[in-house]
Amino acid sequence: MVNLCPSVNHYLLLESPILNNEALILINGDKRLVNGDKRLVNGDKRLVDGDKRLINGDKSLINGDKRLVNGDKSLVNGDKRLVNGDKRLVNGDKSLINGDKRLADGAKRLDNNKYSVDIANS
Image 1 (cartoon, helix red, strand yellow):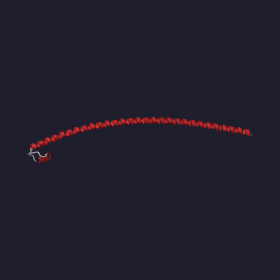
Image 2 (cartoon, one colour):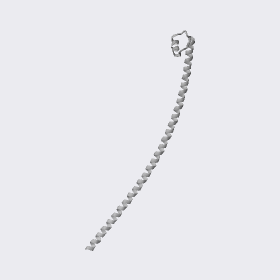
Image 3 (cartoon, one colour):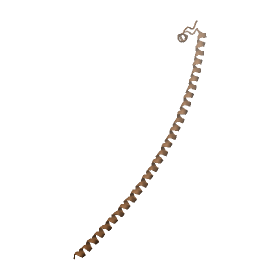
Image 4 (cartoon, one colour):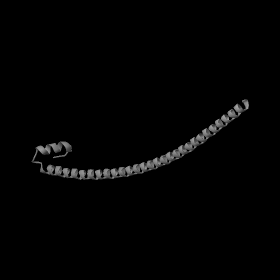
């Protein structure tokens, strides 16, 4: 029998048990498919290696996150500077309080002047 179309022949082999040589070719064909599956398994291994590279990529992202954490540390240091800034504002408020004390002293002097004026008028 001439093998004109392998796919048609494979269907004929399933229905014709007398074509043993063709059946052997079909078995050998199946063996080639098994070898083909082995190549697919090797292909999957390459995909696993690809996934390993993705995992390394994720490691790079984790290192990226570490840099972001260091960035957050810089922001915390920035907040510390703001706290120092607030401390300067508190010191500024203390100056204002001292300023109010001076105003109070000035008002006291005005009262003394008023008293002296009252004495002069009397």
